[in-house]
Image (cartoon, rainbow, N blue to C red; front, side, top):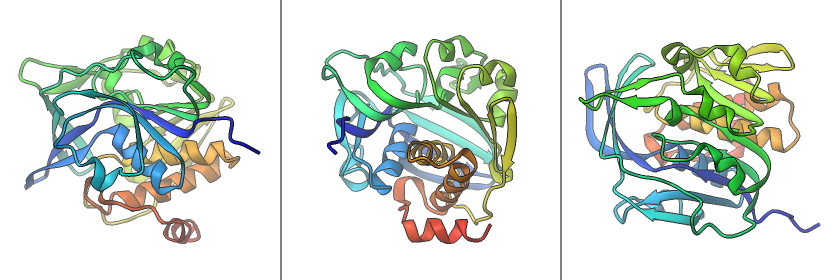
Length: 283
């Protein structure tokens, strides 16, 4: 049977560079990232026909990490830089050089995808983006709609849940730190989606569905880079759900993918089926 969708997976969001400091260890080299890139890399590794609606500059290493991803639409824009300060698994951010907007202008008509994955970096995507595509299942990682910036470029989180309410999301993935910092109630978010997934770092992920919740423990691994862990998790969870797995099986699969990704720097990870299932088999 012919696939009725042009794509299996489309990610929407800005690319970025990260400069990281872990406790007293500083990495001065910029690391290519951005939620849209992490999600597209995950989808590509898992064998899906992947497209991306994003902003790009000539120096971003697309060919190195995302050579099999179709750029459906690409704004020319200066890639923003996040400065990430980690203490344990807690992250403080500063953001510089952000001037990007991603709109529906010049998108192909009747653009269709089985999975729509929306991950704003810093309010660059309109909340009506859900209506830009024909899709079967949608996932939102709303971090960028919660971010605000002070005059010194430090990032803080604000309860901008009204932006999330404007879409029809099957899956919403947020971190526990975001809920606390932005003062967002679980009851408000759980009304929006079929699956509300709250990531809790090395404790795992709590999934709220059908007025019930379950905590699915994480896999213990030695990490090199925590950036993108939530994006890899959200992508692989959504892909597993779209393939008919239940939410517990999907969370275990996503936990394994996320655990593998943080053993590498930035987009250097590679998700291999054998390694994923070796982790799952330890449960």
